[in-house]
Structure formats: C-alpha cells, structure tokens
Amino acid sequence: MSDLYKQRFSEVHAQMESLLATQKNVYNEFLGRNQIEIESTALLEWKIKAKNLLNKACGVESEHYQAFEKNESSGLYESNLDTLQRLKAIFMAAREDYEGGYLRSTKSLIQAEVFDSELEQAQALLDAGYKSPSAVVAGVVLETSLRELCDRHSIPHGKLDKMNADLAKEGVFNKLQQKRITAIADVRNSAAHGKPDDFSEADVSDMIRDITRFVAEHL
View 1 (cartoon, rainbow, N blue to C red):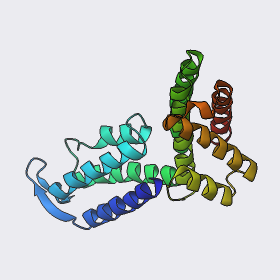
View 2 (cartoon, rainbow, N blue to C red):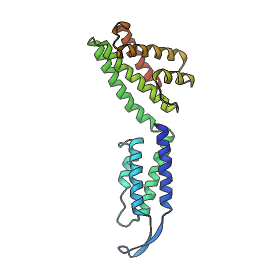
View 3 (tube, helix red, strand yellow):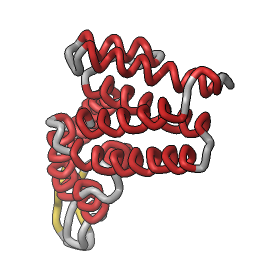
View 4 (cartoon, rainbow, N blue to C red):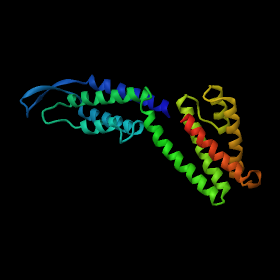
C-alpha cells in the first residue's frame, strides 16, 4: 500500500506541474486589472485528487490535511494561482514527510491501539473459556502485523508462512522468531479449522503473550 501512495504522490505532483503550466493573463473586472490565472476546472479536479490522497496517506486529523482544507478557497483579492501556490507548499510538505517515514509514528500509534484492543478481546475470550475464538482473533493480529512489516520493507503480501519466511530472509527478525511465528500460526490454523484437540488453553495464552511482545518490538 505504501508504494501505491508513493506512486500516487508522484502522479498528483506531475498533474500539479501541468496545471501550473496553464497560467495566462486574465482581466479581472472586479479588481480592474490583469492577473495571472490558471484553468479553474482543472484546478478543482486537482484539488479533489490531492485532498483525497492526503486523507488516505496522512489522515483527516493530520496537520497536512487540515492546512490543505483551510487553504483550498481563494481569498477575495487572490487569483486561483495564488491558491494553488499555497496548496503546492502543503502538498510538497506532506509528500516529503510521507516518503521520509515521518508520518509512520502516528500511524503506528493508532495501529498499536487497535492491536491492543483486539488482543484484549482475545484474552477476554480465553478467560471465558473460548479458546478457539481467542486463537482466531489473536491470529488476525499476527497476520495483520506481518502485512504491515511487509509494507514497510517493500515485500509483497502473501500467505502467512511466505510473509514470515520473506521477512526473516530480509533480516527483519531472526530465525528463532520465524519458528515461533510458525508455531503460533499452527495454533491459529487448528482453531480456524475446528480442531480444538490440537492445542490447549495454555498454548493460546502463550500465543497472545508472544504476539503482544512481537507487536511491541517490531511495530
């Protein structure tokens, strides 16, 4: 997903530069003078695309998105070129921060809260005697974590075992961790396929503990 966003930033940037090339002198009757304008319909189209990208890549609560939204309308005495120049500065800052990985900490904090909630749910299910549903919920956290690590290291998504092997091969974690993930996945698979006799409540408890530690160390 991260590579797709980088590609999209590049595409929207190129569209912005093309838009800047449409500058022309236009007489403004309200101001009684000429001023440089750009094609208004194309500007509107670009603003929609850029704003959508900032929403997905940065989030609606980010300073980048908020600043873009605040500055997307032209002032009374401004040209739409002035507006685009302001939005360009915000867009470029967002692109630089995203590609530099500076937005990842916020994303990771949000993701960590989600994982904590799901692992707490898994523990509650186990405490209530539902070991199979508990193992399935915890397994989702593990697989989602591996997908996130693959995104960070530009590794294609695949089945859990393949992502596990690819991440270990890239040195994201060691062989011992790879083996532990394989063992955890075995418990998850047994639970998902209705084989509760293949694992114990203690196995699920260890699974939740190990996934919690894995998330803390790697995400």
